[in-house]
Length: 79
Image 1 (tube, rainbow, N blue to C red):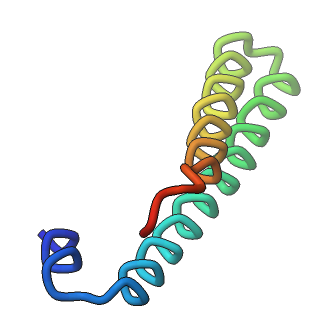
Image 2 (image 1 turned 30 degrees about the vertical axis):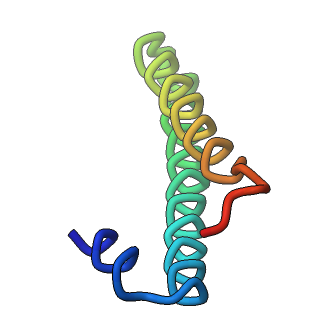
Image 3 (image 1 turned 180 degrees about the vertical axis):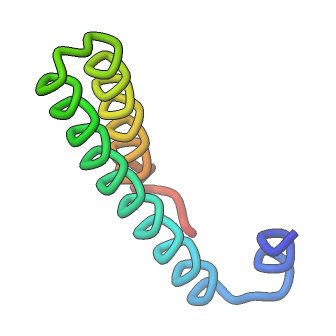
């Protein structure tokens, strides 16, 4: 896997750069997913569809958890 090769042959600067880009990508996905969940929930509200509203809220919660988890990291860890 690519991460095994990064740990073996890459220097700390490269590992840090790759992990930073990966974290930014996952954070962007979390943000876009939350926006999608908001759109689903609003559409469900307009259509008076309770199931669609619940699905939208679930998408929002999952994507927010992903976003927060990727932003929180151990400050003592060296990438």
